[in-house]
Amino acid sequence: MLYLVFSGTIKAGKQAEFFRDVAAVSQKLTRQHDKAVVYQWHQDEENPDKFFLNEQWESVEDLHAHFETLYKAFGPAKPTERLPAKILAYLDEAQVNFYKAIA
Image: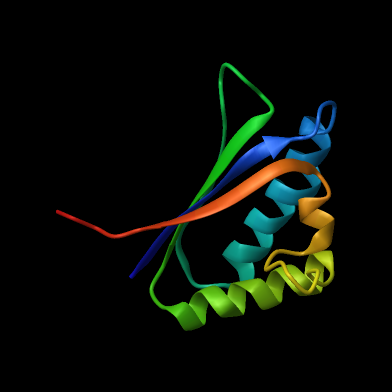
């Protein structure tokens, strides 16, 4: 099982567009096409520029298939990146952290 959190800061004035054009679209596509156990977006209540995406996948293969879904919807990633450039263009910063279950 893979547990990961994608988090970051959205560029000023782009919050509504990001949640409408990236979060909502990726959520819908993931539910329709991918095998996510958990795929849930969150916006910080005190700072609407900050977000995190909680993801859980059964396998690395399922996560890789999800990236293919993202590329079809949002276009390619830059050579040094994993996420589509169109998604990262909304962000001032982004990071991915992987976790392991301990209980």
